[in-house]
Every structure is written in C-alpha cells, then in structure tokens.
Image (tube, rainbow, N blue to C red; front, side, top):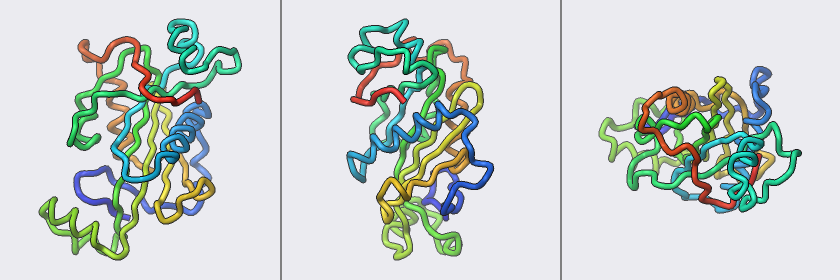
Length: 214
C-alpha cells in the first residue's frame, strides 16, 4: 500500500506476521501492544501521540510518587517498560516533521509513536497528484483507500516493534504486529534516542495519560 504524501513508507499489510517478526525485545512488544489497545479505546480520528518508554523498575526507584499515581508498586513490573505520554507536540505539524527536533534524556530507554494515515494500493501510485493538497484530497476520495493506525516503538538497544490496525477491520484479533512494518517512522524514532543535544527534554518525562505499565 502507498501512503499519502509526506509520510513514512508503509509496506503491504500482511495477514500474519512473517517468521522473522518475532520481537527482539518482548518488553518493547508488550509496551507497543498495550499502547495500541489503550489508544483504540478512544476510537478513530485522533491526533498523533508520542510516548517515552521508561524502565519500570527504575521509575519505581527514582520517581515513587509518579509510580504511585500510575498504580505501579510491585516487583512484578520489573523488566518491563512504562509508556508515558508526552505533551507539547506542535499543533498542526505532522509528527514525522516534529521528530527530528526531539532528543530524549538518558533516563528514557525507548519511545513510541501513534499516527493515523490513509493508504492506497500501489497500483494507483502514478495517479497521485504531485501537489500535496491535491494528493490528500485524491486519497480521501479514492474508493480503495484504507485508514490505518500505526504504533511504532524503539529502544536505545536498537530493538523495534510495530502494531497496525485497519479501520475496516477494527478488532484486536485483526491487529498486525511485527518488527519492521513501518521502517520510515522507526528510523525517525531511533534518531531521537541517539541525538546528544544537551538541550534535550528534562530527565523525567511527564505522565499525561492514564496509561499504565507495559
């Protein structure tokens, strides 16, 4: 499938994850799938979201008050990531355009993004207008368009995981997941973790949703 302009390339959506799609990091996979399920509760037509992924055990040790607010208090959470939704994304700016200006502090072990996009079958590539506004209108009016929600997560260690849900198949059993389903978005997320900008965000990300630990 082909996305509308100015978005990361998205491959054809497989019916099942390929054999090589087993998660390198089960904790990351669990966090991505939890974020996907959490966001799905709010339905469609949502703005993009960005999450910091912090080690749950470190969060309990270093920020006990925040952990208590999020109902995280037991050793059973060790070895997992806690997703913390971020505020302050630029209004009206595509998340993909904002990511190059983001750098995470060392306390953040990974990050994840949620975006919704229209995708078109590859056979219509030559019909898409060059003008971005016209291309968006073309995609929205095309009878074979598909609406997809993409959740992509990465870690500093280099692991990645994705979950995709089609609006036309809006149920948990139809969520497609794997390691490299949205390569363009994954590359942008990896770059935010390896930017050494000293003016990066504060050492402790702020929890802005009811999201719990992965």
